[in-house]
Length: 199
Ligand SMILES: [Zn+2]
Image 1 (spheres, rainbow, N blue to C red):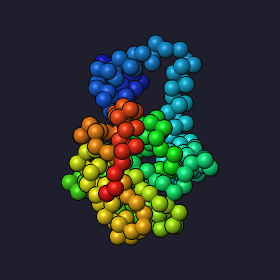
Image 2 (cartoon, rainbow, N blue to C red; image 1 turned 30 degrees about the vertical axis):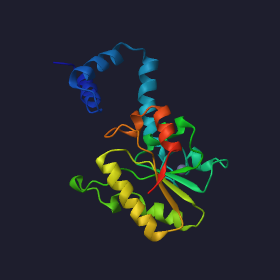
Image 3 (cartoon, protein in one colour; image 1 turned 30 degrees about the horizontal axis):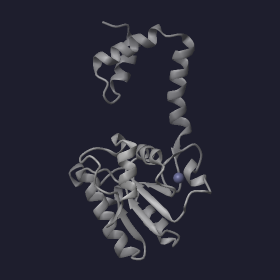
Image 4 (cartoon, protein in one colour; image 1 turned 180 degrees about the horizontal axis):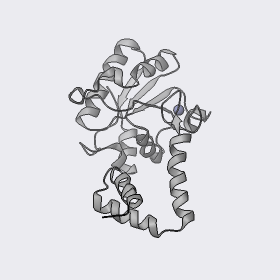
């Protein structure tokens, strides 16, 4: 029913998470009405994010270049690593201002049902970083979900065996169970950080 170029835009937009067909249509018509300049800016932003954003070679956070802004920041404490599942989990932790160390982004959580095994996560890289000897604490800030908890327990077990001198901590309870770090408000997450306990 729609002209093919418009239908193509609807199809592409509908692939985005949380965007159903009707919302995709509404957005496509909005793009059609918008100025040339705005439409091009949107298209260019999408191209740029794919071309210019890479993963940090140290922590696997998003970076523009080989290293992320946090790993490049000399004021950040090198002796503490906060382990998170995804790059977007770094943002809520940063918002709390409770953490001055560095990160390690696993790229997911263990989930045997979905076929996510330890070797699918950036665990070898984490152990290699810690084997360097500079690290005194690893904070496991995986999500308070079943898979996030399983990942934290697995990593804690490995770290105790590999590097027994390194403290392994987990965020205090109080985070909404089953929720993602992303959705925790900064006060709750800040408290969970301040009250982290040994694992
Ligand atoms: Zn980094």
